[in-house]
Image 1 (cartoon, helix red, strand yellow):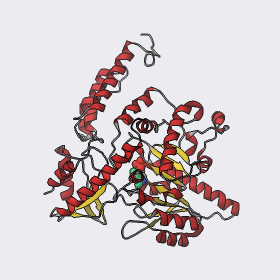
Image 2 (image 1 turned 120 degrees about the horizontal axis):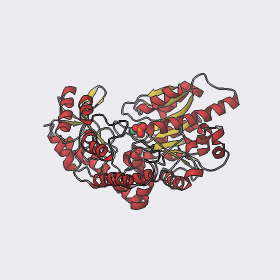
Image 3 (image 1 turned 90 degrees about the vertical axis):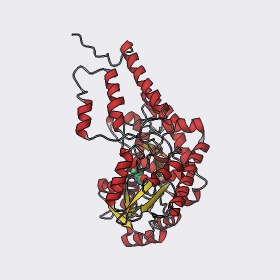
Image 4 (image 1 turned 180 degrees about the vertical axis):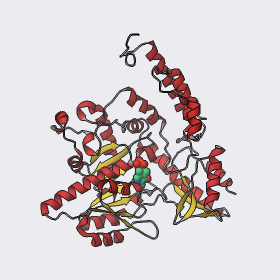
Length: 457
Ligand SMILES: *Cc1c(COP(=O)(O)O)cnc(C)c1O
């Protein structure tokens, strides 16, 4: 038997057949209007159905793709289904999802200007546009990273680096570093704190909104050990926006870095309906927003933007002999702005979609989700047996079915998915189980939502 080291790379009849199979599947899936909601199978059943696929001589593209289409894909919930209302849904625009194929096909490298200037230019145009929408100055910039968790971590690392430099210059480095945020802040802030070995000062509030006076109290209590305050621009559980302007005042008075975690909600700054809720974002030292959430990009992308990108670069640039060619220039290399090196230019699907449709459609799509959230909140308030937990600010609607226990919600949620009716997982607040609609997909309708309420009768 002769070795065939380039069989996987040469353009041959076999290669053409593989590419055709994959593009044909992608074409059907992208244009499908009846992909079922689907649901996970138990691990043992999936293993039995899939069989052994990784073998010494391969099972061939046709068989592998058939397995994907008929066994693996149906065991993955269809996250872009309009009845997917759990967590934070994903609803990539068709242009964005399709362009993701182009990014793969082109083997683009998005880490350095030297290798990927064109891709980096387009990503930066999107980041500059977002920075402008958020009211940040012209010099603001950053990078698309994998997700909000890595975005928050990278921003906080840059903030601590800046505080450490200043403290060392003054000879006053504290024993312990702290970050102040709302008790409702996303779990990724606590995760970043664990990675950084710092402490989180979680400030509680009666209504879930972190305000300037509470931040001031925390800053006075913890003094120079606090290097950053995180304001949440749209909490994941409720879509609550903190009092960003008040927090910005407090942070400025104490000379502390202001980071905005807008992974879910900051996109709503694009809507004239909710823009006013975000006053103060323009004063941030860093912000994040996840395009894979409310900016209709495919997984996975978080836009991380620094007011002064140089502070991000100083904290994150990796130095190594084999990288000298890259780090000895002033070129803009996205790798330098977060805790990563090799990267896919994951901002490109959003770039292509924005360039295709224009920003106006984004504003309309975001506004329609906010309007629908208001409408269904009204409906919940009208229906006997239902209690709205609080009025929605953005697209998250949390409510209770009176007299239901956790077990009732769990049974109901499992049945909704079993019946392929919808994907709505229970949530909880202050120790009470509730139901939660995260509305984001422009194809989600009032009728979808009332249909789900009907199943709780
Ligand atoms: C989703 C979310 C995150 C985490 O983002 P990932 O992309 O899931 O890592 C952080 N903060 C908030 C407010 C979020 O909603």
